[in-house]
Image (tube, rainbow, N blue to C red; front, side, top):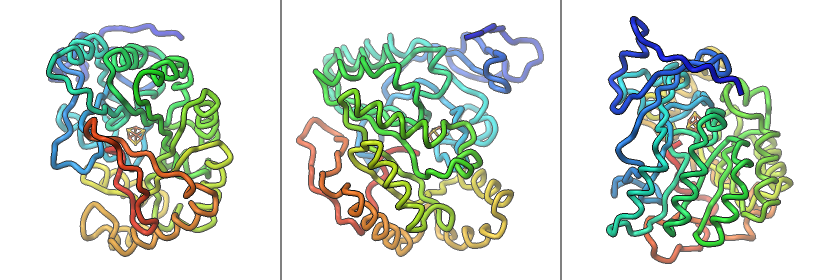
Amino acid sequence: MRWEARELGGTDPAALLPLAGLVRTVRTPDFAGVTFHEVLCRSALNRVPAASSMPFAWTINPTRGCLHRCTYCFARRTHEYLDLDPGKDFDTQIVVKTNIAEVLRKELARASWKHEHVALGTNSDPYMRAEGRYRLMPGIIAALAESGTPFSILTKGPLLRRDLPLLVEAARTVDVSVAVSLALVDPELQQRLEPGTPTPRARLDLVRAITDAGLECSVLAMPILPWLTDSEEQLDSLYAALADAGASDVTAGALHLRPGAREWFLAWLGREHPALLPRYRRLYAGGSYAPADYRKWLGERTGRVRRRHGFDRRPPRRWARSPEPVPTAAPPAALEPAQLALF
Ligand code: SF4
């Protein structure tokens, strides 16, 4: 890949970012309109607050910002901590922690490390296209496996195929969960909604490649969008494609619109589907979550479709917050499952 990095300076605003550990700021013709900020991080593991509903205690995010540009992404607001905006900057100003594997190894070697589950893919996609250049994931996978730390990866990126041999090897010694994020199979809507993501077909093929490699692959079908992707026919097509691709399980949930994502998504909706804007404003008038009766209705519908395609025959896999045994009982179909990721 052509990568003619140049260091920016002078009056370029990107060079003025107050980023801790900034080594250089880089642009390349292979990533038009994108600026990479390469930093030396001081920590790799992020503690998830105990009060969080996330089913894991630790995360790793090798990058900040995401080239997948999902309009609904609720990690967008994290860019404000960098004095960047949660809209276009989140999509184009990407912070890359180039020394993350080395720092991670040191953290995992500490006597105090309890080998709790670590989740990747919570605030940024670890297999976005830039990973092809930076190759951070092989070092991270090796460090986790060699330290005996169970981990999970959630991605929309077929680049994960490159690391399948490493993941298969890691799964011999630690619990490894791999999940693909895919909530719709209409390629036109997908391109408008998530303009930087690989097509649904590419992600279905990724599910197949993961299962062919001998690993289970679950699917996070979130967000389901009211009036846009929640019809019985649309969900049926999605679950049929996932079953055909060999997905081991599907977790579906309604759109979540927290501040940062909310403004960006509603602006998109106003441009693409203006007639729906007042309906969404009413539906999300009470906060970030869709009303409980909508979520109950959606849970019943997805439960029905899930059963139709045979996904109820296996207990869903859960990610643990501690080394305690993982509960395997399936939740009632009518209840929306806990959000398994920060996005
Ligand atoms: S939802 Fe995930 S893949 Fe999409 S922009 Fe956000 S972090 Fe990236």
